[in-house]
Picture 1 (cartoon, rainbow, N blue to C red):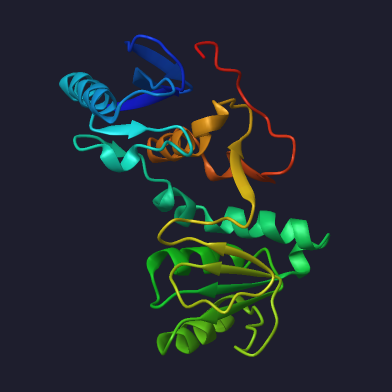
Picture 2 (picture 1 turned 30 degrees about the vertical axis):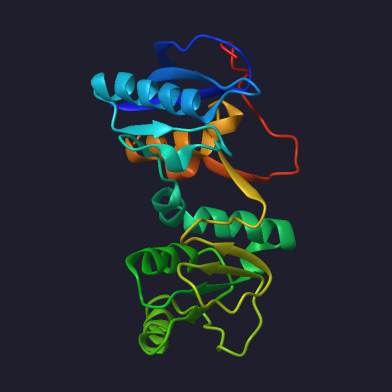
Length: 241
């Protein structure tokens, strides 16, 4: 079971309920932290909230972006978006390409990682039919894999000294060029944010909710698109706030 913490910087009484978002059913708890609340009372409220959610079978929890007390949670694990972003790295790369050039199919992408991870392989093979060229920045085995891609797909492989429009890094040590997506540790999407067509989700946690929907098979690759975070974003007004 997955829960959701709703955070309010005002006075109020904590409550627990059930919330339905798309194909998700969430056990939702409200945390009120008014200005001046002592650390002792804050810790008691957090501990009570965790006991309530854990007692209802919640193991993972959706948090509002920027939630300041995530490191104080002991029983609940925040929903992680990293695996989702790595699984749809091709979607992110193509969206980034569309921001830097009109002819996406003539664009070039560098895929970088400390080792030839499965996510990089899958991304490369999905992109091979949609872009002009790919550069594989992986120590040692990267050159062999690039040659295999060239034989398999007939795709020009950019030499390591060549320029690209977008860099997708699956691990540290990337040689960033163009629009850079860092899909490791704390992922950084270069100012992009993912959405699903015909699905409105609360803005303060929509990336975590998309990750859960992807995990459950309720969102498909073809449903996804991205917008810059500075753009006017589609969002769902949250009636309980």
